[in-house]
Length: 506
Ligand code: HEC
Ligand code: HEC
Ligand code: HEC
Ligand code: HEC
Ligand code: HEC
Ligand code: HEC
Ligand code: HEC
Ligand code: HEC
Image (cartoon, rainbow, N blue to C red; front, side, top):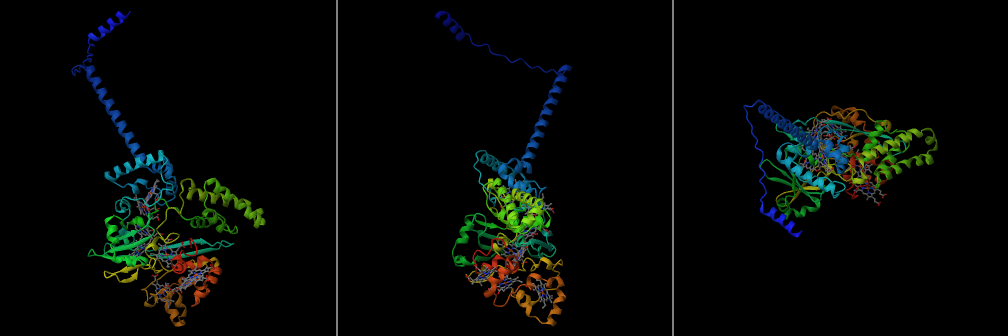
């Protein structure tokens, strides 16, 4: 037995395996069936190639689309939800996030792989916070569609609010935004879009660029006019700005320093509720509905279900405090609650930790400092010798006309029509209060430039604002509510004496 196996083994060892000769492929183009087969093969290969290419393009397009970025990727669901409500709902995410050309495309795909990894390992941050560091410069994304030289028309804004009182009293502000921008024909640049043609650099000390401590405006000769936060003026003599340049912490302002939420804005609860009342989606005649809705939307909850339960609890408020309304208008109240839930689900994402507070909007000055990060009267121009000068302007009519505000019945439908140059006596902020001492003759002159609506400004003319306002202001404030005082003051002026302001969102 042993021998037999060993013999077999030996035989196997000694006989080398027969080399497997490939069958020779012989193509003889003179033979018709060969010609036919070859042609068939080539056609099949071509078809396969085109198929692969097409599906590749489709995969490529899909990974560039809003559905992929926002819909398929759970952590970005909030951005996707808000994006569909934005002015850019038809602009693919990639148009702003990647832009044209190969280099950023490859960079973004590598970043994308990192993000996929973070999702798979559940290690992404909640919320995904702004800003996006290393975002492609706006010049190469936004300016593919928007030409800054074309923003120069002033824009009239009519803003509807509702007060937090029992009647949800409507309040209407109208103002003209001084858009400005760059005029190619004259070379003049002014107004809100002045910052695009005049290079503005800044240093922020926090991750979200809310605390700005230094600003430099480049002049035509290349030198910088510098502004320091008031508390840091003493730093002007140190090398902290040079260090920041060296460490790459100086940022050049572009579109995104103001329009940072334009792709997926999350308006604050006040704005969402005001819009819903104005559109009739929440009935404005249910007592305290504005105040209650805002309060519920602002509270923090761990889960959406918890928020919904709290919103349903509002029914009890009406049952206890307004039994008649509860009995007669129950379905209206329930409709309002359903809409409040809808607002909640589309602006607050507790599972992902994202809401209107987490990613500040810098396009205005409420509820985040926005423009007031620099325009707060506390950023002082410092010359080469270290002497302090004027502050970056906080004048209420730098960016828009002083708002015309009407409350309840006194709402004014007119717009603040203005003509003529600004007279000398207007240059002081105190003019807003002190023009009340003009006499009848002067008053007629005013109408040369001012439309009647401008002067029928209910908020201004119904508020008692004596010269010693400081002593009576707390009482007057309680009587009139925050909306009225903030029309002229905003938090930026109250915070001079009340650090942190009086209310979170005037
Ligand atoms: C109109 C341009 C634009 C579009 C369209 C857009 N984004 Fe953005 N997005 C931005 C800008 C600008 C920022 C950076 C904000 C900042 O740096 O402060 C940003 C930030 C983000 C962030 C960081 C977190 C945050 O909320 O700031 C995520 C995530 C995001 N975008 C996802 C998306 C997704 C997903 C889409 C498509 C569904 C999309 N974006 C469409 C402009 C856009
Ligand atoms: C692919 C083209 C495209 C790109 C890229 C683009 N936008 Fe727009 N944007 C539009 C269009 C179109 C509108 C007008 C939408 C409308 O009127 O309904 C618009 C409207 C706006 C508005 C006014 C509406 C609003 O949201 O308040 C702003 C501000 C704006 N874009 C800023 C930006 C910024 C900043 C970027 C770069 C981050 C950008 N856009 C990138 C096409 C684009
Ligand atoms: C200093 C802040 C700031 C910068 C920087 C800035 N904008 Fe604006 N922009 C505004 C404000 C404020 C408005 C008015 C917003 C509103 O209507 O509420 C506005 C309005 C707009 C509008 C709407 C114009 C209209 O007629 O309604 C567009 C579009 C726009 N900006 C695009 C851009 C683009 C593109 C850039 C970059 C090249 C840019 N902005 C840079 C502050 C800025
Ligand atoms: C990073 C700092 C910074 C931010 C943020 C900022 N600005 Fe400015 N802005 C400046 C500086 C600096 C000047 C020039 C100095 C001055 O006018 O006092 C200026 C000037 C202006 C001017 C006058 C331009 C002219 O006609 O000469 C307007 C209007 C203006 N800003 C509007 C805005 C608005 C609106 C916002 C917010 C959406 C804003 N700024 C945010 C720094 C800033
Ligand atoms: C640096 C520019 C700038 C300065 C300075 C400025 N504002 Fe504004 N303000 C804005 C912008 C931008 C908006 C947004 C307009 C809109 O809603 O589209 C705004 C809106 C408002 C609104 C309407 C807000 C609302 O939702 O009803 C009021 C009221 C207001 N400002 C009051 C003031 C007062 C008071 C001052 C002086 C303390 C002031 N502003 C100074 C840029 C400025
Ligand atoms: C030569 C034209 C002209 C005349 C005359 C004039 N104004 Fe004005 N006024 C303006 C302009 C322009 C503005 C807007 C300034 C801005 O918002 O940029 C303004 C703004 C105002 C404001 C709001 C801004 C602020 O600083 O408080 C008040 C209040 C005002 N004018 C009162 C008066 C009164 C009262 C008279 C009559 C004594 C008068 N004006 C005469 C042109 C004029
Ligand atoms: C029509 C615009 C307007 C309205 C509305 C308004 N104020 Fe004033 N307020 C001013 C002006 C202008 C000044 C003078 C600013 C200055 O002296 O620097 C002023 C000054 C003050 C001061 C004194 C500040 C100081 O430095 O001494 C206080 C306090 C004050 N206001 C509180 C209020 C309160 C509270 C309300 C609401 C009931 C209110 N104001 C409504 C325009 C207004
Ligand atoms: C010049 C400084 C100054 C300014 C500006 C100022 N306040 Fe006051 N405020 C005071 C002082 C002082 C008190 C009294 C503090 C006390 O009695 O405890 C006070 C008290 C108050 C109170 C009562 C506080 C309480 O706890 O009862 C309210 C409300 C108030 N201020 C609102 C405002 C508003 C709103 C503004 C902006 C429109 C404003 N203040 C601007 C100095 C100021």
